Image (cartoon, rainbow, N blue to C red; front, side, top):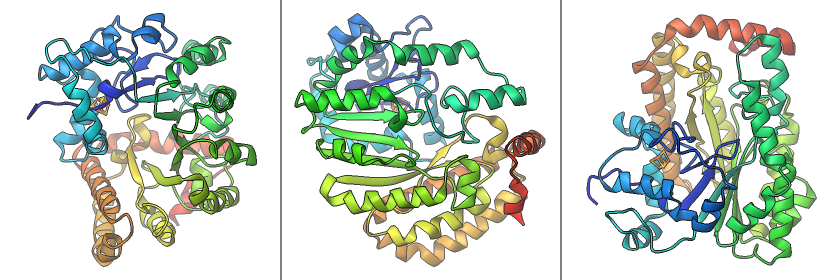
Amino acid sequence: MEGKFLCPFPWMQISTEPEGSVRACCYGDSGKTLGLDVNSTFKISDAQLLEKKINHPELVKLRKSMLSGEIPNFCNGCKRREDVGENSPRRIFLDHYEKEFEILLGKTNLNSGELAVDDISLLELTLGNTCNLKCRSCSPYFSSTLEKEFEQLGIDFSKENVQEIQAFWKQGKLIDSLILLSREVRELKFLGGEPLVTPIHNQLLSILIEKNLSSNMSLTYNTNLTLISDDILSKWSKFKSIKLDISIDGVGELNEYLRFPMKWEKFEKNLEKIFNEKDDLNIEVSFNTVFQAYNIPFIIDLLEYLKPLSKKCPIVPYFIYLDYPYYLKGDVLKVSVLEEIKQRLSLYYSNNEEFYKNTLYGEKNLSNFSLLFSLLDLSILENRTENYFDFIMFTKKLDKLRKQNYFRFLK
Ligand code: SF4
């Protein structure tokens, strides 16, 4: 298998696009086609998928293509990151699921891509676009509350696609398919929108508890952490473990600005709640930050804010490279500005390297630091300062609509 572009996800996981199409994971370029055949879209409720699960013909094709030494178009995102020396999700998860993947490879027909088991281990559900926030870097495909603003600002999006997303997750019978797929999984991952505000999420958890399927199952969430109720904590207590990937794009008012209309005070209270329950409910916490033109100048503030949590969780966030919208990407900033930020960050890093190295999650913190530097380098290398004007125009228009002012952060 040496030298082949293999990834554990097509062997273990079924993931969904917001409108229910199945893909291998959420990091791919074009989930709807799995990168193989433009006609291969199939949904999480597809009868053949429910029957054959990980041996659905399209998933078999994806594995076969990897085994034959190809890199599926779907995986271009990982390839691009690896080409610039970055740690791709593929590499991270190869490490994470090393043993399990080795066993599954041993059960794979290397010519056909068929697996000797039908069960999936991971189910990743993007539960539509229902969300309580309107993050600047998001779109109506992932946040229902952004639809109106996009219309007001005249930003193009497909209303039909948004309606398709919303209709899909409202189907009454969908829950039966989800239960059927969840029965055997050991990890259930929720993406959104905001999963904690989605009715089908609550319904699914309640049924899994009722059917005694929860105690051996781990739950993972991408969450904005604005909605931590006693009810959800009580439900989580019935599961084996909980992992929260918490979205944070800045500190205090900057986070309120970028993840409007969240309230920082509420976020901090919920974070405290989570850390109070951490041991009892077996909760693991990490942070995700969207690397974007708005927050690049303030990354050191964020790193400093997270420092006191070093005994509880990794304190350098996992930085997510923004592909869309193009005008909020880090590469719209001038090279000289990015170089200056990189210099400041390098100085910060050399002054704090020992501290980060000796933290409880030292290796993870250092690896996320290296990702951050790669993203800065990528923004310098693939610079698109010609889009800076669009960044400013978008910012001014949205600021006016929301009665905000980004430029006060820069003073
Ligand atoms: S290689 Fe990357 S994009 Fe492809 S399935 Fe793995 S994690 Fe997803």
